[in-house]
Length: 521
Image (tube, rainbow, N blue to C red; front, side, top):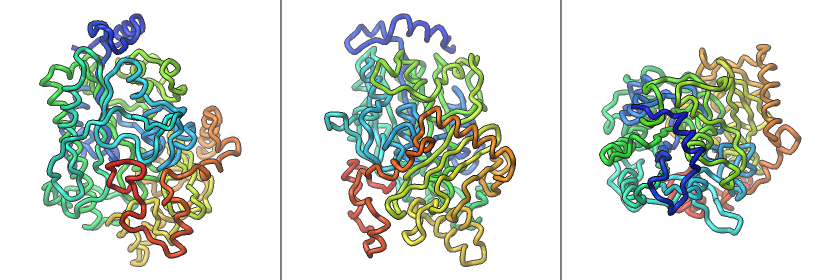
């Protein structure tokens, strides 16, 4: 039977959050398990109708709760996306944290830190906020997503998958959780981040390239690209298997009924015109939530526009906390609890905002590619502030703002084999304005910027950004290019490359800024 959510929220508001050391009987707040995949696009799950990726655990969460069909990250790159998710603020409201691989400003607290101060037992496994450096005002390392649990390993099914036993580490966390005290756990998978073992989707996953019903129109449709997609799907399935083990553990221990489970991704798939860019395959992400005692009418599919910045205020509300009471900056996102209740008390959000700043290396003077965008109805409008720059990084450094992959190679090769259109879409320069009908053109192939709706959305976008004090709206946007990298070896990459330096093993030492993070993000 579903918990009556309004009554629950009233009870939390009346009694206040329990603090560490209080009687367990006073604390009725839900446990929270948030599972975050690394580079997973919307549409690639069984619950969303995909037949070449099997995700029974994600499907279970959607079946027992809500599937959000229109969920978006405000930035399709790991560091800024996770920063937004954890703070409830858009990246352009987070100073240096708008950039990938940054030094996180100490003044912006995260909801796991707030929950820890509010009486929750908080832990994590795998990848938390990353990559970058996060220190408090006194220079001490911050536990952005909770205390780490990570001693268990396993033999990975492929060379591209890390040996983390995420589910076993979660079991350790559950054993350590004090009885009667609510807990919050962050499961941060390193999968399906690249690299992939070539052919693993077919040999390990048992799939055929013909199982893929459609290759996005921004890439060549050939066996190389289809095989790359299957390899990606196989790593999504690895993420899902660990989630399934976690759900089974909660069910067996009797804790599932009062656990809010949220499953999502930080950004879209690591392919050209996806991760790191500002298009549908980049920013549209999977999102499902279940909570037997608190979500009404299980199995619902919700069309409301949702942003990752909505997760922090949702969790804080259910924990009986307010940002100002737990050293967090005011949030921009809006709580999803009315959608949980199945009876929205406010008009639905009519738009979400997107953007990017300096996502990766490879441009002169460490420049980014600043973009802001808005999704409203079936339209995606983008404004490129520096259209003279290369959106995926400069050609001479290898378009470094796009992960290396067989698909990337296929797109680059197509330019000289009679199909330059793929290169133009993925790597070519763009105009200042872009407009796409994402209902009819989810691959964002036809720019409709001449349509009068473009000017209307531009005005709405800029008004919203001005209200959020975006530096791009008041002539201070240059600050994003001036924020330092967290790793000195990334500075002036373009100039160093032209002088003959090349990245070799150990040249960009990721261990300098995040221990045990073995993959280039």
